[in-house]
Length: 101
Image (cartoon, rainbow, N blue to C red; front, side, top):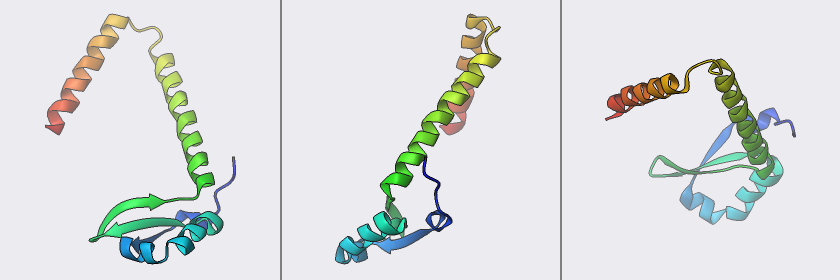
């Protein structure tokens, strides 16, 4: 995995209209300069442009981390009765859903 350089940790905001005018240069800055661009319209973030290497590294990290979390949860619950675990999960889901409605 490539190491992300510190300069990639900042995001430059660019309006959609400015991006349209200067699209080729912006794409070059993202690809060659490892800049991350936040495309803005009406003050709202509409999309993010990120270097493909950074994106692939990030996705790889997330996938690895998800499987680590799954393995940890399975290990912590290996001696728990499956029916009891199912009831606990259903109860937790009900609590979360009642807070989001």
